[in-house]
Image 1 (cartoon, rainbow, N blue to C red):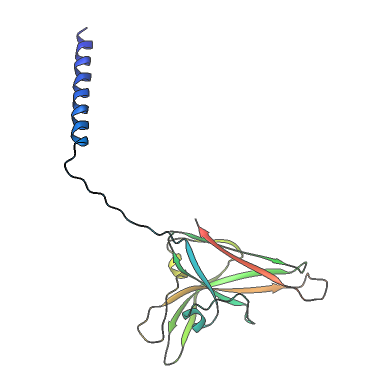
Image 2 (image 1 turned 135 degrees about the vertical axis):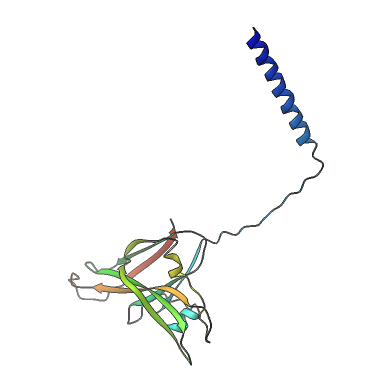
Length: 184
């Protein structure tokens, strides 16, 4: 019986304490609300020809030139890790498209030109590849400008090759290459 009485006293004390706190909070004498607008941009990327001015001016291309090379650069994003998926379709049965890539720096050399310099090893990018927080800065576009002291731009130089050995019917064919990006 003594334990039950102590338990009832403890429960009553908790109820009164909770009621006191609830009363104090409900009768606030001052309050203030803050707000913050947030824009989630997703991913903005560009595909340019393998040319300094095309990169610098963000002049996008939708066709491959005779070198079969493009530069992919991420302009804006808000994710820790990114993925790139390169696929293709073709109306020529047997055509095989492959893609390899190498990171590049893009910087002003002067007096009247800039350079695109590959670095690191070449790697396969056909299909799905991922870029973590350490590798992602190597994809980021920056305006390298037209004078010394400007930032260095980065990107991914992608080289496509087309194997036609298994295409048995002569003719003109078109390969459609799709580049997709998302976040991990």
